Image 1: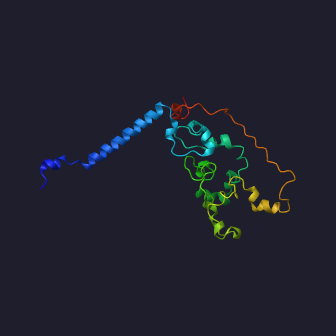
Image 2: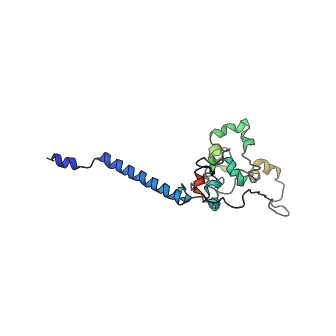
Image 3: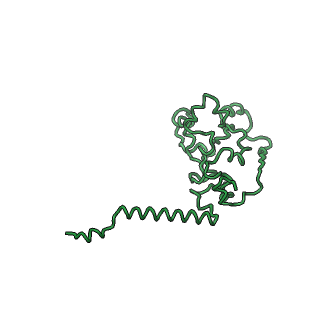
Length: 215
């Protein structure tokens, strides 16, 4: 039979758990303060940054205002020119025929499709390979005979479709240009002019990151 003295020495599971929780909280607070004091913003990254955004990875305020979600306006600082003729823009989804599709995925919000710091596919900003299936799953399931048997993750990863500019693959474009030669007499790329407001990334300042970019 166990004596009362020995029973008293047995560790209480509740106190052990509480001590562990307190220790974890203390470590997190120390880590947070150290990163803030040493201006080590990369310590706060939730995951891997896409290759195209690593140039300003250490300058959080280039995209973020404090802890607010990244806005469309922020994305447009760099991507306004290429989005000028967005095939899936507000003009399309303002049409009542397509408006209900926004209930499946809010494609008018950049971050609904593009997720940074969440590795998914090794090309461009992280984008789910089967993204198109939110609205077009029927195409590979009998709605379009030429696409029967296609995989859900092949629409854009195979290089066939571009969500923001599908003019060259649309049936209307194909019907209009079926009698045209495969190549123009003199192939050339259209001029893309991008005007930037900043000539260099903002100077890193972790203090400003937590004040929404304000001093």
